[in-house]
Length: 86
Image (cartoon, rainbow, N blue to C red):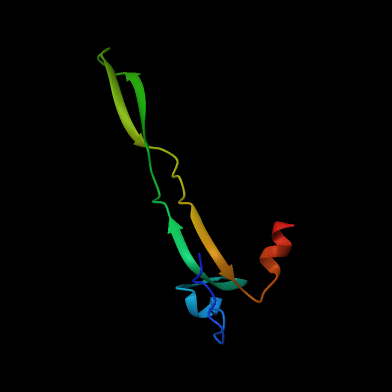
């Protein structure tokens, strides 16, 4: 929550309070908070019977899970993100 307004003082500037500048190929903006989860590559177990008739398990890399990026309290002059959201 922003600090209470004091008579004669301007409200805080959101651009000055922003800590992160994020640039995409067609969009850029400033944000006060950026949260990123880590990417994951789970192991997948494959059960099979070997040439000698014994059951075996092989572990292979699974499908990569991409990280989730959360941008909070952003500001930009470009409306392309808003138009995409609509």
